[in-house]
Length: 131
Image (cartoon, rainbow, N blue to C red; front, side):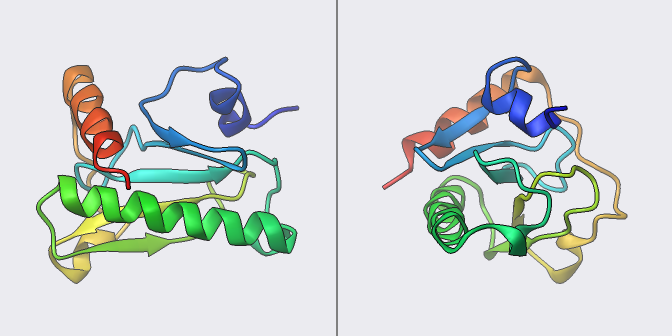
C-alpha cells in the first residue's frame, strides 16, 4: 500500500508543493514547527533513509540543500535546521525547519496554524527563491 507521501507525489492527495525533480519532491509540512517548514522526500518509496541506494541518498541531500537555501531567502531565520526522524511515515524524508533558536526544532512543541492562503504564499515564495 502506498504511503501518504507517495500519494502526495502522485497527486492523489493535495500538497503545497515547493519543488520537484526526477528524484525528489518538496512540500510544506501541514503541521509546521515554523512558517516555511518543508518536507523533502525521495520519489522512491523507501522506509528508512539509510536504505536508500547511494544515488537516491545523494540526490535527496543535494535537493534538500537547494530547498534549504530558498527557505532561508524567504523566511526570517538564523539557519535552517535539518531533522530525519522517520517514525511518523514509513517513507524516508527530511524536515527543513527555519530556526531562530535551538528550541525551534523541538517536535514536542505546539505546531503553527496557517491559513490555506499563507501556505500557498509561502510555498510560491520558496519556489521563486530556488536557484
